[in-house]
Length: 334
Image 1 (cartoon, rainbow, N blue to C red):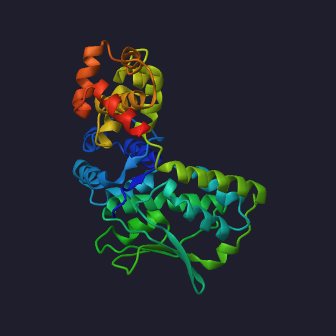
Image 2: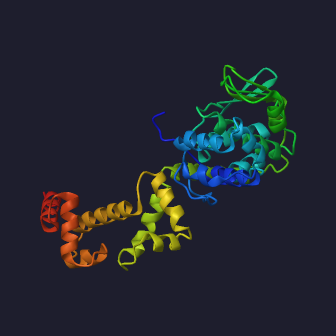
């Protein structure tokens, strides 16, 4: 898949707490993906490509070849937030489910869940992922959410997976409340199609429209909403004051500095690089689009003296600040 895959942070947060309830040493597992042994921020989206390392470490630490399924069975009841409200306010369960699937990327883009009806059976397909433990764990919050929005009426007939090796039939039945078929043509949850026509007890057309509009906006903003964006927003008020440090940033964001460092590492960067990139872009913009003096720009970009600014700018662009401004402003006037 060309697009980077990621999950809403709530899932890793739920997994952390589930491992704790199971009495598992979480330190080594979370260290495998460069995270500290503390509850991850549920608001920070996580790179899905780390799932293989994470679950490999979980299996090694526990010695449990079915660790993903067992963790799924220990997950707290999943509250689907925006998408759950979308389903609850819809006219029918089917309408709500289709709407929720349309905005499913808000929770993960690592799987593309689709709904179809084959005769009397509805099929929620797309349960495909290269990491078995992640996939089998992820099914549990899906089931718990669908059961809750139907007041317990949702009952899977069978769950199918493409992978050929898995847990015992009894363990699957215990965790999912349904039989599992392995080595199937597709990964899917099969259930009675009549349930799609079930009226929603909280149906409200106006509320549904408001929630759907909000979901659409969230989906549009998703690509821009990242920890780096959040940091750069805060930098706008910190650079001039000269109080730029990882510790100060963590305090402003009400995060642990180690967690913030780990979140940035998961994005393939670090705090110093984020600050340098922000300063460079700010300096380029001020030099090319304003008449501020060099001394003013030195202050606005948070440098202690003009010589330090000049050295940094030459390193970034290969030009002095004056030469850069002259060239850019000549291009603009030409």
